[in-house]
Image 1 (cartoon, rainbow, N blue to C red):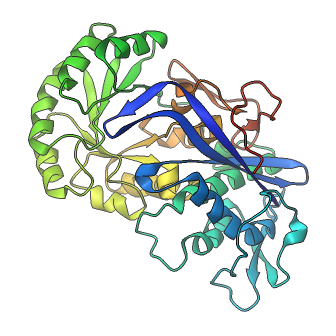
Image 2 (cartoon, helix red, strand yellow; image 1 turned 90 degrees about the vertical axis):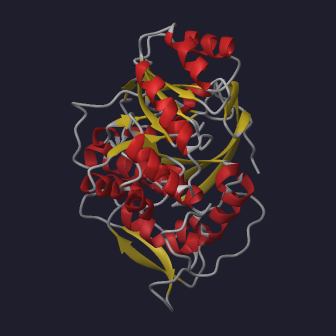
Amino acid sequence: MRLTLHRFDLPTRHPFTISRGTTTVQPTVIVELEQEGVCGYGEAPECAYYGATVEGITAALERVRPQVEAARLSRSKSGWCDCGWPRSSASEPPESPGSGGSLRSTPATRSPNLQLLRLEDPADFWEAMCPALRGDGPRDVPTPATFPQCALDVAAHDLWGKLRGAPVWKLWGLSLESLPVSDYTIGIDAIEVMIDKLGEFPGWPIYKIKLGTPEDLEIVRSLRQQTDAVFRVDANCAWTAEETIRNAVSLKELGVEFIEQPLPPDDWQGMREVYRGSVLPVVADESCQVEADVDRCAGYFHGINIKLHKCGGLTPARRMIARARQLDMQVMVGCFTESTVGISAIAQLLPLLDYVDMDGALLLAEDVATGVSVDRGRVKYPQENGCGVRLLTSGGQGVVGASPF
C-alpha cells in the first residue's frame, strides 16, 4: 500500500463553542491508502483536550510508514493482506526512521528487514499496527495515539470494502432496514444566536444542545419555543452532581431525552449520585474513551457515546458496542467537528446503534470529501463501496487549506 497524508484546515460554519472553548477552524489530517489504483481514506482531526495535534498525528503516522507500506489487502474473501514486521520478532514493530521530507512515498521505501505477515482483514491490520503506534503501553489507558490509529483503521476499512466490491456495513453482514436518526448540534452562544442556528437547520427530529453556562435552563426554554423536536443536552463536564440532578427535573419537562457527560470524567462518586438520582438517563462521553472504559461506566451511566478517534477506529468500536450490549447499556456513536471522511466511517456502524451524532461535516463551512450525507437526521449512503468516500482534489470544489507538506 502507498501512504499519503493530507492536511486541511476546515473553517466552521459558525464559531463552535462548548463549555471548554471555541473553534473557528478545525485542523485535520486525512490518511490515504492506495493499492492497485484504489484509494481508501481515514481522518484524524486535531483535539487539544485529548492531546492530539496535527504535528503529533503526522509524526506517529510517519513512524509506522514502513509497516503500513509493507501491507497489501486482498480483493477476495479468502485472501489476505501482507503486513511488514521485522524478521527478528513477530510481536514487536521495527524501529521506524524519523519523519521528514514529503509525506508521500512508494512501497519501494519498505525497509529490507521487513517480511510479509498474512492478515485476513482490517481488524488484523489494526492489531498489527497497535504496538507500532502505542509502544509497550497498556491498551486500557487513553492516549493521543488512538487518533492516527483511527485514521489508519478507517482508511483500511474503506480500501478493504472498495477492493472487495461492497460497502463495509454489508461486508459485516448488517442491514440498513432500521437506523437511528442523527441529531444536529447547537453550540453555545448568545441565546438569540442559538435560536438563529436552529433556524438554519429546521425540521430536524433531534437537536443536541451544548450547555455549561449560567443560563443553561433559559437556553433550553428559549429553544423549546422554536420547535417540538426531541432535545439532548451535553454539558461537557461543566456541572456538579447536585446541579445535574436538579437540572434534570426541568429538562425532562422541556422534552430532553438524556444528558451527556454532565460531570468531569474523574468524578465517579458524583456520577454514582447522578445515576441514582437523575430523572433523565445519563450518557458517558469523556468518561468512555477506550475499550476498558465500557466496564468502568456500568453502574454510573445508562449509556456510552463512542468516538472512533478516542478508541482507535472502527475495529475497537465494534468490540465496545458488543460489550455495552452485554452490560445492558445504550450505545451512541458521536463525532468531532470533522469532514465527510470521518462521518462516512460512523455510518457503517449505524445498524448497531441506539443513537448517533454524526453532524460534524455539517458544522463546516466547506468540506473536503464526498460520501455519506445527513439530511434532517436521515442518513444517505452513496452508491460507492467501502465507506463510500471520495476525496476532493486540490482543484475541486470545497477543498480548503490543503497543505502539501
